[in-house]
Image (cartoon, rainbow, N blue to C red; front, side, top):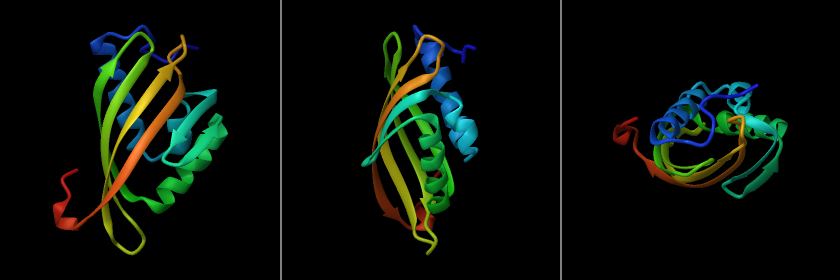
Length: 135
């Protein structure tokens, strides 16, 4: 089954893929998010290296247990045939109430059916005051 849009990407379809990813991640539903990736997807997320959709689900569950009231914004940076680069930022707070804004870049590679087979993310966190939130 295909996961539209599929490569090769145009500016319009790459932007659509980014918006679909943003919307899915903002649900904070690990199974829904993981459904966009191949069964054997390869990730680098911060300092974690994982392989497989089940590992993605486990990582996302841990992530959203820690990152409370998570809100994400993604922007298309550039694209080629089956690759998309994204800039993103998100805001969240920890259990003590400390707010953060996390910034990063992702490099995505898709298979022919539109599933993401590789995701490499570099992410930095900046502590902020709740009054500094804008997402």
